Amino acid sequence: MEHRLFDLGDFVLQKGSVLPSARLGYTTLGALNEAKDNVVICPTWFTATPTDTATWMTGEDRALKPSRYFIIVPNHFGAAVSSSPSNTPPPYGRSTFPRVTAYDNINAQYRLVTEEFGIEKIRLVSSWSMGAAQTYAWAALHPEMVQAIAPISGSARTAHYNRVFLHALIRAITTDTDWNDGFYGDKPPVRGLRTFASIYAGWGFSEAFYREELYRGFGATSAEEFIEIFWEPFFLKCDANDLLAQIRTWMHNDLGDHPNFGGDFDRALGAIRARTIIMNAETDRYFPPVDSEYEASHIPGASTRPIPTVWGHLAPFNPTDQQFIDRGIAELLGD
Image (cartoon, rainbow, N blue to C red; front, side, top):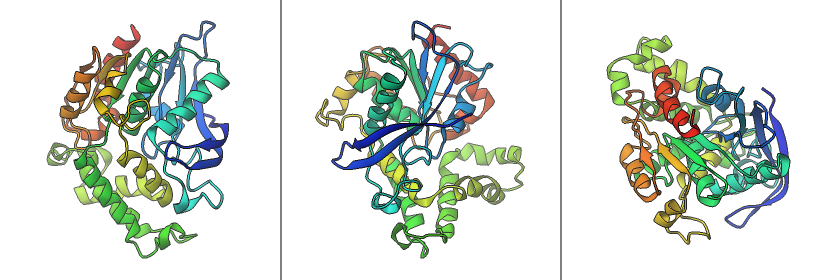
């Protein structure tokens, strides 16, 4: 898949800074029909490129079929394809990259959708994790435009327990002696990234996943080996500053934190008019179904569909759980 770049110019951010010469990375699948009513948006998740997201969310054997829908996959700021610490020149690169919110990402994506493609209606917004946070933001900020949403293993506001996990990730990187306040040059904080991976390993999958030794399906003979062959390579390929920029967006995510809603989380949820099915894994430590139930109770007509799985947060990578997710998406699409 080809990654394309949409030039945003000097992009004003929600928290008062400006990202000069900002770029939004994206890819598309399928074709926009004449009526422009077959549009699906799948925002990226933590660390993901548009190609990563398209690979795991779409396919001719999936609910999101490129032969039927025009699927836009925009990359959030900080995730290496769009403007990020690793690709932004001084003085806004590396650890000086400005704070970006979920709403900043939606403002950029709205410009792409309307200016580049002339789209006025979005049939569905759906994605996983940080992509789910952007899904909520799309529906709250543009209720007249978004017809349906399916947030998967994510939340409209980052919970306190979730933030405890994120603080641990930040400490893992910033206490590495090679961190150098983010100006590490050609000697990145590798030890910090390995610690980062070890912390993530205990949150990404559930306790039951490890108890049942499902890591053996990945070729690992122990939980320790699973960290080495699965989690460490996953994060060692990432730029540490990019990871921290994305964590800041994740940590401060709050649907109510917008001038339209004045900090009122319930009001922001109530602004959503899209048909909504929220699908969080029963065993997800970041985004437990209890949070989804609260969100659904404040979104008109929304429902929750807890995913029955031991895969925890990574349920969307399990083929059986993909089938469960696709049934909800197909229902919203009317297929």
